[in-house]
Image (cartoon, rainbow, N blue to C red; front, side):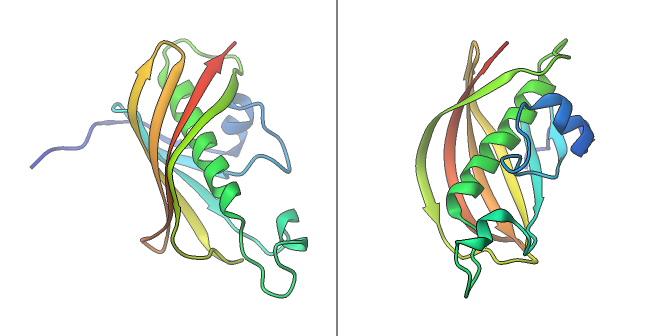
Length: 153
């Protein structure tokens, strides 16, 4: 039985996310990040509401949250985890999304759902980070992917 890494940041709220990432509405796709651990894992939270701009065209008669936005939110969650985990990083940094691998969409996400982006580090080399993400709604995996990003000043 393995024990979990200690939590370094219990909550990164929207104000801290805005100070950490350069993304802004409508492309900021996470509301908070919780339980960032010393092993570079954490959970991003997104409350999906009917007034999201994407629902105007995807699809008006049966709104489904776009899968590509879930993958972007995984990358944003990973960016917050990476930036917050690097000691002494206080200014906003650019996060460039570079790779998506092993991506699968398993179930539609609808208005009213809360998505949890469970991210864990697969590795790091200098400014490059790789994470595996599982997007979950009510404990069920709705999407998964391996994402890679580069952090720059």
